[in-house]
Image (spheres, rainbow, N blue to C red):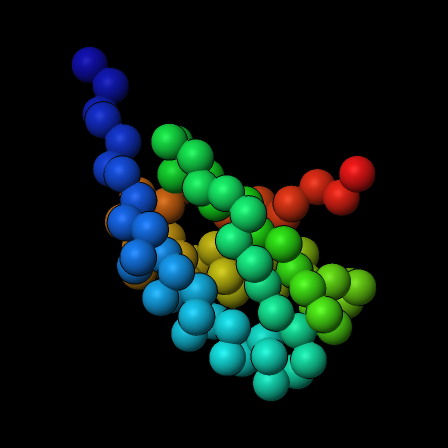
Length: 84
C-alpha cells in the first residue's frame, strides 16, 4: 500500500520562503511561490537579479529545495516556473 502524502503546511512554506528571500533580496533578487500541488511539488519563480542569473537553477536545486525539504514536511520537489 502506498504511503499517503503529507499535506504541505502553506503557512510554514511561506514563512520558510520569507527567510530565504532575505538572502536573495540582499543580492537584488527574490523568489515567488507560484504553486504547491497535492504531491508536494513546489513551483517557484526567480525574480529580479535572480531571474537572469546562470546560478539560479543551482540555487533552486541545491539551496532552496534542500532547505524546503528539510524544514517543510510534505515538500517533495522544487521546480522553476516555466516562462512561456
